[in-house]
Length: 102
Image 1 (tube, rainbow, N blue to C red):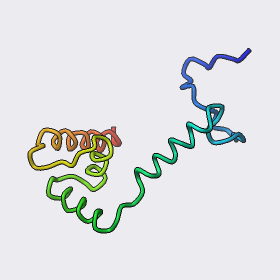
Image 2 (image 1 turned 30 degrees about the horizontal axis):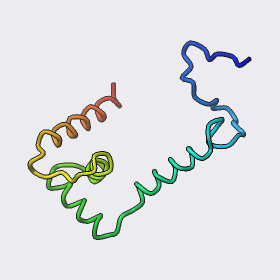
Image 3 (image 1 turned 90 degrees about the vertical axis):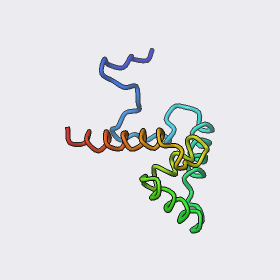
Image 4 (image 1 turned 120 degrees about the vertical axis):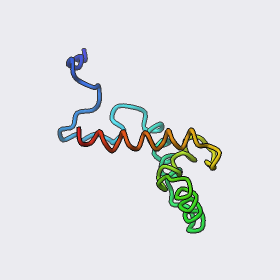
């Protein structure tokens, strides 16, 4: 019978010298499908698309990564009319930045 993890254990794989496959004891197909989808989503776009996203992000006061992540997560390009969403992204940026020093 398998042992239950301890009280403060997060249920993840052991970190010490794991010799098994990278997907652990889960389904290899699901692991490989998610890895392929992640690689495809974050594949570098063409130079023209990258420059267009960078210019648009700078106009909106966002970083390239924030703007691209918004496209990947929500499937839409932000515009000047999306002031509430842009402000929300900028507030989240400040929270992430300040949490490193606490």
